[in-house]
Image (cartoon, rainbow, N blue to C red; front, side, top):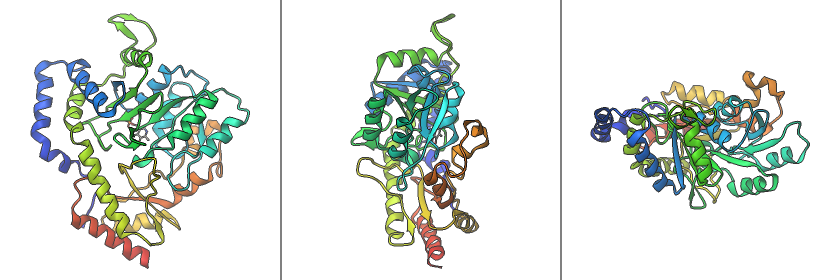
Length: 372
Ligand SMILES: *Cc1c(COP(=O)(O)O)cnc(C)c1O
């Protein structure tokens, strides 16, 4: 049997007519950049998330970069982020000339470690640390209480990387609405995915929201009068129309992901393998379902792939060891938890439309491997 990591065809088929109609409407109006469709989607996200403002942008990476600029982060400033995340978190920091300052992760949640952050902040740094980017990895929130407390103490701006957790909740509030800004990605493979690149920034601060609207559109306040050095980071109308249709189904899809995860958890309980740990302060929307084995994940990965199961490792190399960040001067052994997670974790396919047959097949193969 073959089980892919994700099957978007199954997601699209039942809502195809609705999607086609929404795309057609944009074409009929020929308003392809910003315009009504984007405004409508932004308003829907405001209602959905409870954030005061939502600003659609070109993708999740630009969402992080623009949020940092709007919050006053400048070239040379230090920005703390976990080393165990997708490249774009730190890539966005470096793209505006700021300096990624890496922190280690927690053993059980894989999210940023407050102990590690506090250690960085309490020592003397050669550059001024101005912001922190907690990443809500795999679909569950980092410890925002602790992060906001440290942010107040050290006067840091907080940008939540909500690329993998749009719809998750921290103590009843939507991920991305607790910090100064939340950056969301609608990359097609995310829980809410566009038909191309798209992203969005959440904020409760009107001044920051106004700045972001100008920054994403070439620094324009009125056309051809440029207040600041902006960028072309607009959300296009067709993507907004697609997302508007799909947003209605997001909670249902996330619920179904949770059901798949609960099924896996139940069947894999009590084995020499760690299922995801979810602290009581957060919900988990399972962008990824990650297991941890005692030995190396390489053998698990090869075995599952051989059985037709599209298991992956997110992520095989922490950012502090990536060649592109060599200039930051980190080395092997700098962040031990991230280092060992990268060697031991692997995913099982998870998406809302999985069949019982597929889930059972995956479980059976894992059980055979673990009991060997
Ligand atoms: C996907 C992702 C991003 C980047 O989003 P894009 O829309 O692809 O630019 C940033 N951070 C994390 C953690 C992600 O998973």
